[in-house]
Image (tube, rainbow, N blue to C red; front, side, top):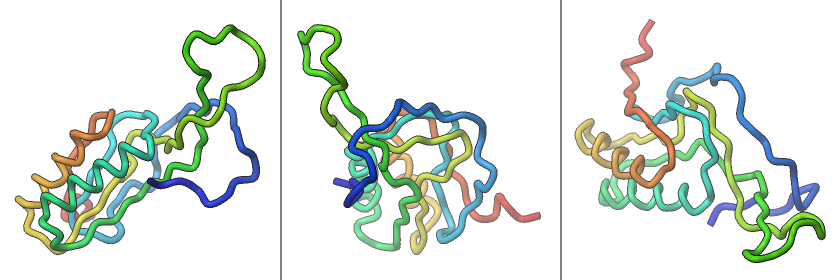
Length: 138
């Protein structure tokens, strides 16, 4: 699972993404998966999407992940009364804004990349869109 090696503080505030992404073009691959709404993606969801993409591509080509879960999310156990401090660390999460590129793929055909990224998008909790490099020609 993805998680930071070390952090300055163990627990953080509940952050909410605001606004849209400014730099939202492909950098490495020819095809990508773009977020259409804001949300929180856990480390398990990122790993499940990465596995689905690489398995569908039958380990051909290359996959780049553009998000990293660096926000600690805490939760209190069930049936615990209010108060007595903040809960313990439950999982790590990454915040996304609309327009953020989540995954990039290269080295495979467009049809295979579209299928693989749609499999990966099924593991994520937000709406996404398939994009290709030629969409950004100015």
